Image (cartoon, rainbow over all chains, first blue to last red; front, side, top):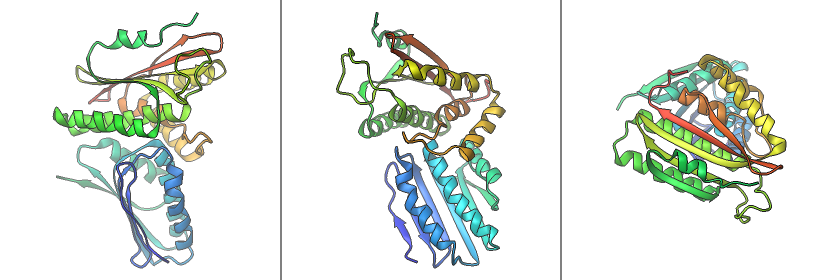
Length: 126
Length: 188
């Protein structure tokens, strides 16, 4: 599978999904008006990866801001990862948040409570 | 009889006005507003915690307008704006105020008010659960909204949603949402 590499913009995050390394990263701001348009290709790509995943997949989420419309799309991404995990593959989500950003930590905990995949909450200290 | 929709704003402008906008809410305007307010907060060295909260709430307020406003009444002065809205951002003691205004068709008032009342009678813990429930169970609507904007605003600010409907004519009301964002959100 070809990797997905997308540069970040002021309203959309940078994406680096590599099936060769099994490392996926979403980083930056995710506040587009039309989040489905942005995330659908990622969800479709994960649907493909799901068929032949690596034994271990690491997902790094390093978001500074995301809007509520992205929050649903990010859940769709996690649901694909949950399916991979359910099929007896190792999946780990690293949820990064800045030290004073309790809202971002809580957002990670929301997903952790909905999705059956191990999460690690990682505080970024300046 | 119709009224001047800007009067309410004039009454609320008892702070340091950072931005006031009246007109079509499109993607370009949203970017411009976000950049302006963010730059202003950085310029005055606002603490990052408050800055992030304001930014987040501003994104949701603007995108609520973008996704949900009804068309303007036929006798309204501005017929060219497809998504007409009013927006003010003010610096007040301890935080920021974000005030939005938009037309709501009479048919949609009850549903919107019900939604707000449900949020306002919930505790902060219940709002958190409501957020998670909607996140997990509701799909993104045809209009592109996720149905989470107001819940998210209430959750992040920790304040009740302060709102008013003013009757414009028999078919329309004007809806004002007056959001206070302060650093601490334990007031609920």
